[in-house]
Image (tube, rainbow, N blue to C red; front, side, top):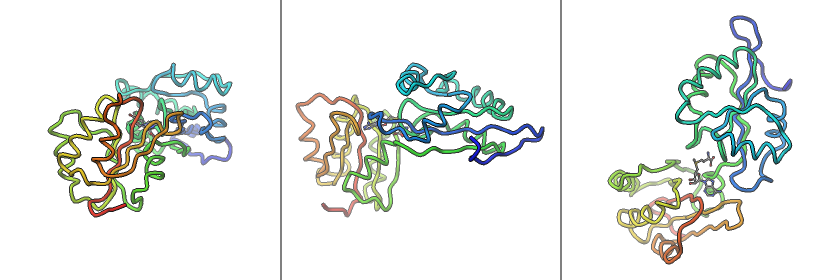
Length: 241
Ligand code: SAM
């Protein structure tokens, strides 16, 4: 990729770049032209699940060697991949969906690259948190991305307690298995009148945004089995619709 910055390591071999490639969170039309170009030209794809990324690459007619980079092997692979970068390889890092390194593997390799002055190039694109926030109707000027809450209820309650008087919007990721419990805990601590937005299946067929009081949204959820992927956003304490 000639237009990208290049850096040299001590041995004067031109080091490669680590590209952080954001991928669709549902709608394949959201892949960017630059992401496709990078996937076609890189030497190696490092991804969470090679089957998931294999399907994406196949859809776009791209054939590349893929290596699995996931939570379990992040430590050892970060070292291996930095060696490859130093030897001149260009590596595209992908997660199953969205932006790598955001509630997804990536931190260790990016930190290792920064520490060793290796080039890291972000390719912006889909991210569930930002897509959700942008369409929520909640204040966007200050937000706190908290990712996934701890699975233990006591930790969740403590988290909500700390956000009781928040002056920013809070963004959380939650699975369909825990979203109802999470909502119940939220109401217990922040009250039924707190304004929230629950975004579900963004960019997919059943995309849904519910913005209103926590009690109203909880009511809408009841009686239906929770399915799909959720982003939960909590408005600042003083916010009204
Ligand atoms: N790195 C990804 C990103 O940039 O959005 C997030 C990966 S994290 C492992 C997966 C979580 O993101 C899901 O459990 C859900 O909370 C949220 N998420 C991902 N895709 C989504 C979608 N299409 N709609 C709503 N939430 C989604």
